[in-house]
Length: 120
Image (cartoon, rainbow, N blue to C red; front, side, top):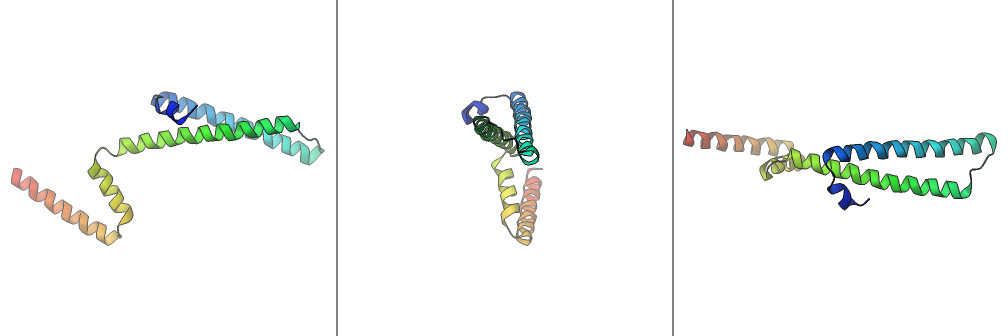
């Protein structure tokens, strides 16, 4: 699965994949934890090939999971920002000094109010 693949998924397919990957990662991590515990408590070492394979699987599933989470976040951001103006307001809120932001927002409200009075 590549990043291009997840971009073509519907929101529902993406959520199902996210859940499946999370469950797989949890299962893999549980297996690794059990193997580590068996080694620690009983001196039983897991097969080297199994250990290598499970760690590769963990990394691959982890990367896929991150891709899915990234796509979900990008879609949520896209839904949240319907206009450039809305994006600008969010960036201004994050980047400007709070006092400067409030002053600019007050000026914007005054201008908007004035524009509404001219129309009405």
